[in-house]
Every structure is written in structure tokens, then in C-alpha cells.
Amino acid sequence: MDVTEQLQALKDKYKSVEVEVPVPFEFDLGNLTAFDSNGLDERRIKNETNNYLKDLARDGTQLLLNQIFALPTKSSTDGVFAELPEPTTVLPRAKPLPKPKLQTRWEKFAKAKGIQKRKKGRMVYDEQADDYKPRWGYNRANDNQDDWIIEVPDTADPMEDQYEKRRDEKKERVEKNKKQARRNLEERSAVEAGKNPKEVRKAQLEKAIVESKTSTASLGRFDKKLQNEDVVKIKRSKRKFEATTIDASKEAESAMNIAKKVLKAGDSKVINVSKAVKQVAGQASAEMLGHKGKKRKSK
Amino acid sequence: MRPLTEEETKIFFEKLSKYIGRNIVHLVDRQDEPYCFRLHRDRVYYVSEAIMRRSVSIGRDNLLSLGVCFGKFTKTLKFRLHITALDYLAQYAKYKVWVKPNGEMPFLYGNHILKAHLGRITEDTPEHQGVIIYSMSDVPLGFGVTARSTGDARKLDPTAIIVFHQADVGEFLRDEDSLT
Image (cartoon, rainbow over all chains, first blue to last red; front, top):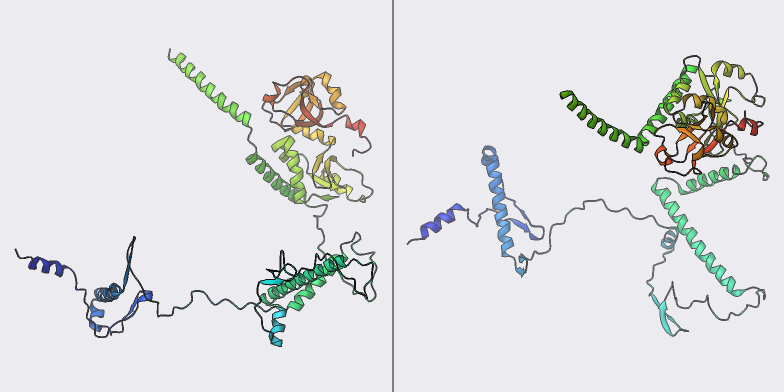
């Protein structure tokens, strides 16, 4: 039996895996791409555009797959995988670059003075504990807040509580830091909104002054005036009511509209359950009676 | 004196509709003569337009009352019906309660209505519904709010409260000086 004929027939069914192109393709296997730099056949693209493009695509894909099959493989339980090399083509970003964050006051100052950031270790040696402890936070190293004894300085008031003083100083430092952070945030948000931070702050203060001046029982009428205090005129919208004597028909119409609204809202809300139950029960009994009546009539 | 704002009208009508339901329409749209609601010193007055126009000439401090006082707005902008509104409420009442003669006096002294004093009640009255109280001879005595629905009320013992007292005509004597 000659199987060569059959094999040849089977082969002819599919196109050859070998594709011949005048200029070899360039491949970027990391991105699974092939670049074809051959010229187009103008006659074919005019006469049989679709078929020509399909052929081109097929050939390109065949070449790409040939390359992929030539790569080293790795087999796992899920199947055999080709190991792709690193991509060589640089792809553009999908999103624009993030805008640089606005510098805080300290960062600006440090840049002007040429102060560099130095990396500090997290753990610090604590002499008293003879151990490494965190630089800051809970159980920090060299914490002077709970010293068991504190020397009173010569110049200090002997009755002053040195512990309290230290506590207060620390509180102040924390408070100051928070204030500066807040100020940085405000300035940043103002700049991002395209405003001058100083102007924003000024407007805020002026508003606060007006608010505080009108927050007394007399709306500031009897407050003590400072020397050379600016006279701030406060404009508030006045309450407005309809005139006492308006056209009766107009008034009745508006009242009627409101009444309808109120009644409509009430209708949708309330369902008288007992009434509804009774109605259903009544209908059922009426039907039964109706049946009996018919029977009698038929008799 | 001024007309009610939209919000005030809404609150006022919501309260009224608890007692007379859809009949508030008849108060607004009257066939005989145009009537209107006016607010004066937190009180809402129901007054014919002719009288209202005449009373404009009286100063705010001097004007005591005009038309019929329906009730007043509290400082938290809730509306309280007064007994003076009874004429209109009784006329358009949706749910009614009749009290027996022996229950009239206790109610007129400001007490709630007990089951024992209940003469008749409108069928299918729901719970917490505004109702108008009548004597057995159909004389309006006041108004209140039902404590139980008609169905539930049947099973109660005679000392149980059926209607919570809100206002009664006894107030015309008891609160003579503050009613307007």
C-alpha cells in the first residue's frame, strides 16, 4: 500500500509552515509582535484587497508562531509553555504622567539651602535600657518623658513642675507640626485650584471676622469697638413674604396646589389594612351569595 | 399679619388632613365667598377676604384676632390645632366618635375617652387617626386621636382608653383668656 499519496493530499490541505519573504521580519517576541517591512503588491491590493490582506496576515502569523515554537519551553502540569524574552519595543503610557506634588515649605527651604535628606536607621541604641529601641513612637529610645528624677535648672522657678513643663513642651511641638501640615495642605489645594494661597487665606480670615461679629445676640450691635476698627457691613438676605393682600384667586390656587400635593402624599402612604381585609372578605362572601342566588334562579 | 409661606401651608394642611382628609379642599375653595388663611403672631386664622382687607388698617400690635383661629405654630414649626377650629373640623369630619351622656363631662374636663363612655364610632377607623368627638345628640365636643382601631377596640376592657384627648369645648371656659 502506498501512503505517500495520501500523505501528500493531507499536506496539500494545509499551507506550508515555511513562508518565504524577501525582507526578513523583525520580531519582538516579548510583546508577541512581528514587523513586516516588505512592500505591498499594488496590483493585488487593488483587485483582491481582502484576500491579499488575509494572506499577509496569515503569513505574518505563521512566521511569528514559527519563532515562538523555536523558543525554549518549560512544561508544567498545565501544559507546555514557551518562555518569552524581555520585550524590546517601548510602549507609550496609557495615562499621562502624574503631576509632581507641590513642595511643602520645608522642602522649598531645604532645596534653597541645599539640605539633603539623610537616611536614618529605625532602631536607635538606648543607653539606659542597653538595647536597640525604635527612634520614635511607642517604647521609643531615649524617652525623657518618664525620667524618675529631673534636675531643676538654677534659673528656673523652684515651684515649677518640670514634668508638666516637658509634657507641655511636647504637646506644643506636636501641635505646631500639625498646624504646619494643615497649612501645607491648604496652600497646596489653593495652588491646585489656581489661586494665590495668600489671597485664599485672607478671604477666609475676612469671612471668619464677619461671622464672629454677627454671632452675638445683638448681631454685633453692642460689641465693644476696637480703635480704628474697620466698619464691616454685613449683607444678609432678608426674609421675604407675600404681600398681605394678594389676589384671592391666585392665593386660593397656590393653596389648592399645596393641598393636592399633601393629599397625594397622604394617599400613597396610608393603606387601611383592616378595611382592605374586610373588602376582600366581603367580595368573597358576595360571590358565594351570588352563586346561591343563581342556583335558585335556575331552579 | 401675613399669608402663610409654602412650607407653613404644607405643615398646616398635613395636620388638617389628619382630621378632615380631602375636605381641606372645601376650606380653600369656597363657593359663597373667598376665604384665606393668615398668620398673625404665630396663629393661623381662617378669615373671609373682605374682613382681612379691612383688618389691614389695624396695626400689628393692636390686632388681637380676626376670623377663626385654627391653631398656632410652635417655635419648632409644628402646628397645634386649637378648639376654636372645631366648627370647621366638625363640619367636614372624616372619622367621628360619639360619647355616651355619662362620658361627656369627663371628656369636657380634659380626660381621655374610655371604652365605657364610647357610644358609637365610625366603622374602620384606624389606629392613631384624628377624630372628632360628638355627644349622642350630635353636638361636637372636641377632637382627639384614636388609641385603637375600631376592630381592636371591641376586645378591650371598659376602663381602657379609646381616644386620646386633644381639645374639648371645656377649654372655652378653662383657657378663656388665652384663646383667641
